[in-house]
Length: 204
Image (tube, rainbow, N blue to C red):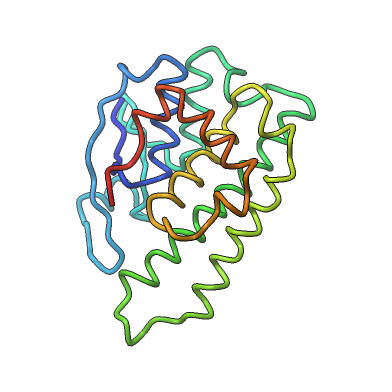
């Protein structure tokens, strides 16, 4: 299997953490890939028409896209029910939590693009602020979810780790650690896991 990725991508990081936790990391070849808004990448568009990271290229040539889908596939390869609960109320809770966290990452990435990539004269501050507020309010929700922060490792906890890691990486002055001490404690615990420590993005 081959995984397209960038060390800076929180979505690719999610898959990398999962692959390590599932014992599948040595089965995956990592293919560095650059995707920049406004810059064509025709070769990668043949793999993923939406030009998003990551994509998992299977040995038979099939391509899986979306970090959640890829993690669920890896989870099934590892026997199933490890990071994505197989059934019951907890399955839907974990999947719903993950969807919220995925949206938070989307909003944070859009903020990054708006404030750094878009030409300054064209930037829309109210739009950027709105997207940051979505991520911030999402953090506030998870700050109150003691059960989510303490249950056995699952895909939504990995996604939350990637949200907080991306906040440190791209929004270092946001003050999330002071505002959300329970999330800070959760993140510090997660950083003790080799999978989380190894996959941290490079210094900004």
